[in-house]
Length: 306
Image: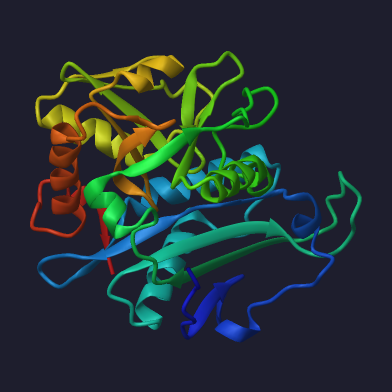
């Protein structure tokens, strides 16, 4: 899926033409992966207005990731939030995917060098359903990856850190080459962690479970949204460890994330999930899209109108 070029990208405090938003080949992050990013969506709602979903929470996590990476972002949270809104407005986008990125530019290539400058950019582009429109409706096929999600002393799981996604990329590529849509990853103890870029939920006998925030997972913002919306619907949600074989006997499984939104899983390791029906997942999708695209005004505190 190619990225459609738009007019401009926000780079270090200024809007820059798309084709001019480049950096040097010796940028530190390009070589070593020490940088952090966010994925944020802006939606056009039923009333025609465009709103960025949970912008504050995403930018807070971006700054948390930068702290983990020992990088001092040379802008305030409010300035980066304003940059996100400015990029949407300037490019005249009614809906889009936003990608803020904080990285180390060129200056020195020593591993521990503090010489490279900390650079900040925000891009926006159109991006449809990450796992496909059909995946949102019919569910996707997953395999359990042989790549393990590392424990939190090996990688910093609570940060969205550039280089840490190498394992996810390899797991995803192998899944696609093997005829699947996505890979699911286990932690070093064999418990279910998450997808390559999504959190995971399992439904059994009407109860929804998801790995706790202290597990080897990213504490996803759509994950948090889903937990709240499910509980508002009267669904019991438990945050607890999940064994691999519990996926095989689940009634429903679904993935959540900014890109994936709320996507049901219809098959895992060539086993059909439940009866192939997703009543709880469908209910969550209904609630979620009512917030971001529809007329639900009860959750306007989650929306940053542009």
